[in-house]
Length: 163
Image (cartoon, rainbow, N blue to C red; front, side, top):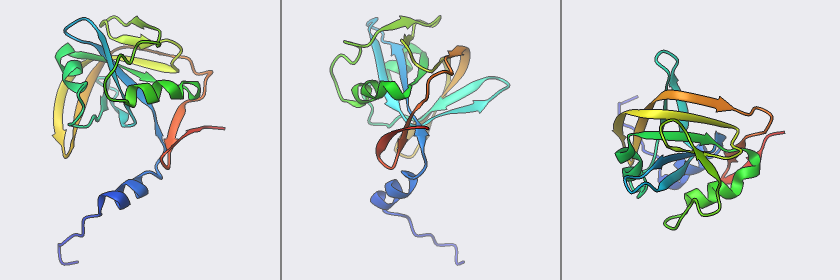
């Protein structure tokens, strides 16, 4: 190889990576105005066991991200297959995304959405630029799960269920 690379065009890149199934999470926080805020993400991952770290990768164009960063904490809510409408609501721009979504506060104050299959409450430890996204790292404060429900999965540009 001569060291040159051919960069993929965005549609091809999206089509190929769309064949990698991802879980769906809603990252929530309480804004400086004391309102619940949140965004749907397909890029949430565990990072480290010691210390316990996770990360999510929001778009730089997110209008909700500054509110989450200002809070200094977040809660990642892993959606179940029965919660596709929640993913759609938190993917939309503007509006009160919590209007019809019941929740309770985690120890950080960040919203834990009712009936999710897992939640992870975190303190933001680092934010790094990565192309047109950020990588937001969080140190886990507490977490819990309900493993009796199947997860919501996004695959080939569609919501799917396992099983």
